[in-house]
Image (tube, rainbow, N blue to C red; front, side, top):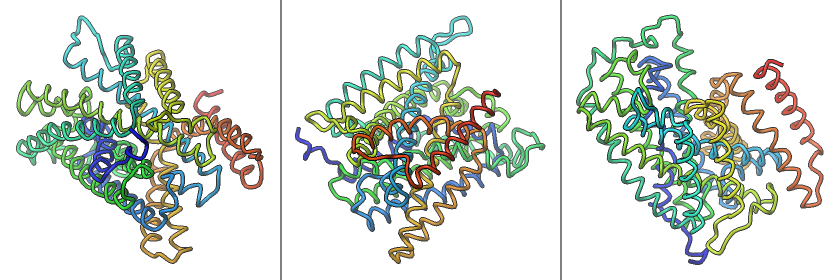
Length: 468
């Protein structure tokens, strides 16, 4: 297959967006939301996040139409608007977010298998971080590695099939919860977290933010692969269509579940909590429907996110922001070095979560936090460029997306911001190597202030997080 044949149409791009967005998160939503927020706070949280993400999607669409010369996706906008180093950090953060997301997918796959095979006397898969889970996850990682070596088009076809397959159990879950919904259960703890009146409504709403960001990560999937689209306009269309479909499903699943089982019970369920919700409605079959659906869903999401993970450093290297070796491809256009390095990092994190006892929720927070900066920069660029080019619609969408991005950083909290800085700082080595290959100095001008600021934040992070 030639590289010219390795192009994606509207259906494949939309499936990529839906496949990237809908992964493990949708099946953990009932417990994740109930653990931190009441039904009222969840409704407010979805209104903020849904609205913010709609404007972010519209911002992507506007940029695809009005700035077609920028073909390097999320970080291309950051570079065009704010310089090489900011563009690099956007690419670096996005890449690490995708890699960590893939680890979380593997963890929840085997946590789900634990629902089927573990017993109180014998824990095989546990929470997805036992040695057996890690060993089988590793086989999965390298199986996907060899699949993706065959080319993006092959992976996109499989992703399309898994996207269709995983929507079936999700629709079953939605219909079942709507039918079983009881208003008296939904309003039992309407404004209190699992009956705890001490947690304010604002705190509850803030606590939902990283969860809602997590389940929406992937909205930019078509944009990242825009250079592989047959028709440029399909990129924006796929982004909006994919977002609206997933938004409706997410709102229904999280809210309807709270009308089937009380938030107090939901908050203490093992994930994937959606399996337990459906089991309570239709019996043991519900556990298997959601369990099988989750495994299909996460396998597809893993494939989508690996495609995004390898595409980001590849296109960044072509744009001279990453070292040249990241742009090396095989005969079907797969970035071989980037794929290998991403797989090795996933493997290393898998081993780390076993040793350090990290779980799905921790990985969720790290992945969500790393992608907040790239999202914010997209909105800021659209705002800036819309004003410079006198395109009011793009400036308006970008302005709202920027405000949303700032709100997310605030809502995520100091602890998560400091954790993210520890992962951004090592990227400077990669950036310095890329600039050296071009014969350019990187520690110049405004870059000095950016690096010094990041250095101060990183030192604060080390001090606060490790209590040195």
